[in-house]
Image 1 (spheres, rainbow over the protein chains, first blue to last red):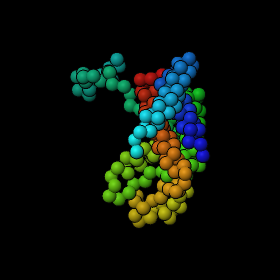
Image 2: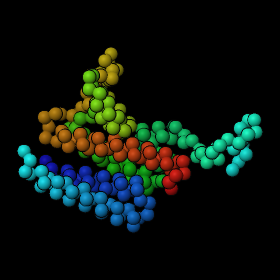
Image 3: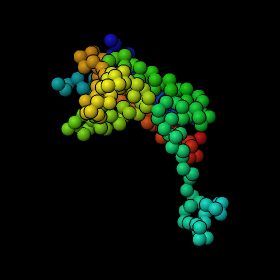
Image 4: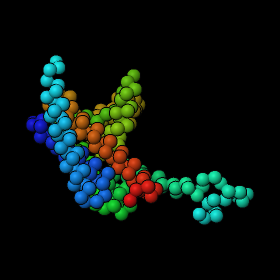
Length: 55
Length: 157
């Protein structure tokens, strides 16, 4: 089981959901999807790296 | 402003009555909760309905396939009620999964609502990931119900 793939799949679903919940025009949805998807994936990777020093 | 709404039976005006939005039909909110996407479909928001239904169903199915466990209330553990509320957001999916995991007899045992099984396999590699997907789908559907409420009230298009 690839953990990163699951993370990306989860981010994809959540980003799609909020893009359609919070935006009503196609362009706004695209922007919202890309932003939230990148924040979710990159944010998780960054937080994961920051947690390395902790036991 | 319609006089029938703004005036009471005795003819005096009712403060703020004209500003009050019409109440939202409770059956609409119920079906929105029970079947993800159906509330938007009934309101004519077909694309949003299909996307919400697909996303919530995909998240729920992923959670089940990863052997995740749905939250169920446990005795002497009040926080489990919060988790259960979140998972209950899945609507019919939650009820079907509980029925699947417990059977009819287990579902309506004398200890109800305690002693239920949320399904899943705690030693499976994807157990906690599965739980995350199941909780996420439940919370997303609760947000969908709130969205249906806002659209039906006219606060959102």
